[in-house]
Length: 163
Image (tube, rainbow, N blue to C red; front, side):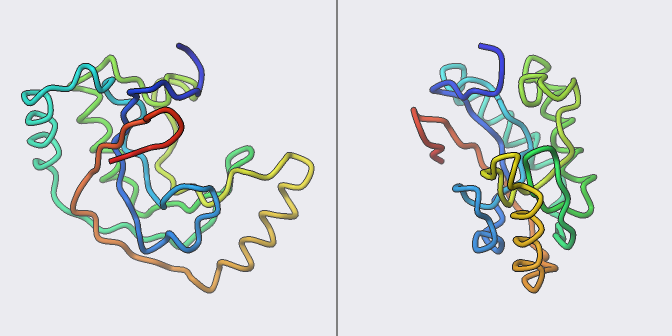
């Protein structure tokens, strides 16, 4: 399948940021994606999971600070700083499993810059106004700093992501 659509059994590697769940309006928990899609769950076995754990464990724990809103077309997001540790995790996983192309290649070989989606539900005709208002509403919550000590694998199970 090409395109953005999720396929049952798709997996993603994510950094959950529960400190920001209250600001996210996108209908899913606050997170920064390390890699979507990762391997289909039918390809996962103990050896693969062990190798993934070892690969991620080779990276030091780090902190991300979320202080600034940014926008992609149709998306209001928070930029994590520094983004380098997230990029390094993505690079390590993709180097080991090169068939895992970030975002199915829709945004080019490198995918998107690390981000935490706040909202992506506004239609084009109301986006600017709605996202401007949302930024004003949520600005008092920022900055937020979160400790990153784990990367979670989630699986798309026909309509929702599960751990």
